[in-house]
Image (cartoon, rainbow, N blue to C red; front, side, top):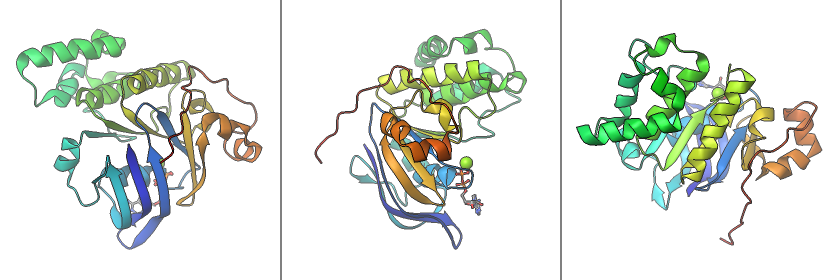
Length: 249
Ligand code: ADP
Ligand code: MG
């Protein structure tokens, strides 16, 4: 469980996130939505330790993450897939994937690579190609696969569906549901609320650095104001949603 309490964070002297409280449960696909500039990317960067934290806490299973360096965060098995520049364009798909396996033995690398190709079948077919020559969706799969190979407990993804064709978006979100089912705590930032709301379990909506909604994807869709503000017209049909069990604490 990843718990963010009274977080104020930003860049230099600029505070972008104001008193944000959120929690992310393992086994749930949680989406963070909101218009452009609302602080979604800043939230992910704060969890990953690359913003200025003014105050508040970010805890993973009661361990404080604020103040930890990247290597320490990686030891906590937190992986971050930024929106852009998330693969090495001049390297082959396979060499990109091997970046996620730097700590592994040769035999382990071979085994984990073949697991990655099972989870991301397209990558097996593209193994020898330069990542820069792939389609946007394939590149997104490479970035997700590198992160997955690090065996993250928390996976942070910034707009994984941005710029992708609808059929590819479906592949990406379907793969994210598979990761969710394997126990990864998924934090997915999206501006394209309409499509992610079909796939995610839990939703936070941000606006101008503050949280304006939290609840299940169903509750979000049932909130007409929310639908009007963030989805436009038309309700998506949910796919393979998890029932939410609320804990008492
Ligand atoms: P979103 O991802 O929701 O579109 P961001 O978190 O990227 O929003 O941005 C939130 C606010 O923080 C915006 O006003 C943006 O201009 C500002 N901001 C983002 N990155 C930086 C940065 N590196 N330095 C200064 N301000 C930034
Ligand atoms: Mg952003």
